[in-house]
Image (tube, rainbow, N blue to C red; front, side, top):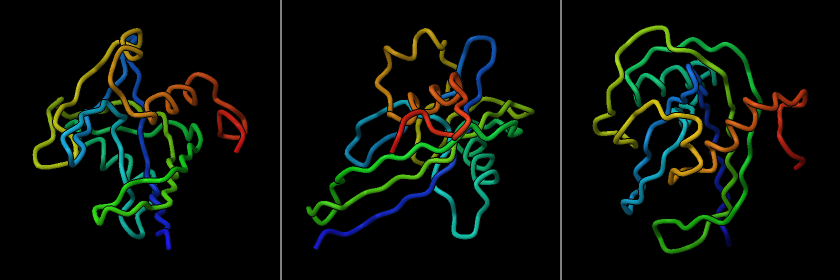
Length: 151
């Protein structure tokens, strides 16, 4: 039997002066991918609060959330630690935000190892998670139904 896994997460897209705030995620096997600051909701946590908390944890910045951009979903098989596959479904709530305080720093002891402002023109050349492209598409298109493409 294939295990079903649902992960609900929240992310903040912070774009200023032609740059986007990103964090570099480190996979358990050591792979490193740039991603949006954000992550999984704690049980009972509001998605806005989760996005604010995650940005601070991963970048050192405090942010204000300006707008709900939409929802991004991902559904695919995912390897599990026990060598089996899981039926993985990610539901990612995407917000537009802006920095209100703090100082840029790297996370210590978390899921990311770097934080940086990256020029939007340089994003396509990065090793990155698909969440970056999904967030940027929502930020650019701002679809009325909150999703970039159909189900």
